[in-house]
Image (cartoon, rainbow, N blue to C red; front, side, top):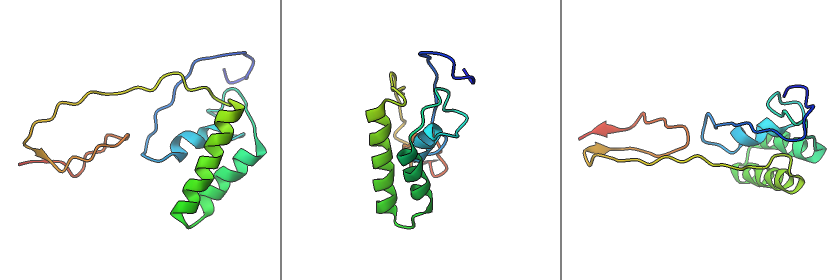
Amino acid sequence: MDSGNFEACVSGWNADFADPISFLDCMTSTNGYNSGKWSNKQYDQLIVKSKTVTSSSQRMQFLAKAENILMTDQGVTPLVQSGSAWMLNTKVKGLIYNGSYYFEYAYLQ
């Protein structure tokens, strides 16, 4: 896949932290996970801006615009979104659900 010499492939990525950049950064022109070699200069610029702006609302606007470009160009076509079912004992408190499954603040009561 690294050569980019294919018409279609199936690959996967799971976010390693709970932020849209964990997915969107993978599709920048120079990212090693961008196996299809999709490239869009405006997309790349928005990702860079999202990493340098200090306003969180403006950052999310940049990321939303980048996502829109990615989906419009079909630089990647999401086919499957994994999910998990949870059973929780009522004695577990302080559990914050997120995509990274990091439960530092959970405790038993």
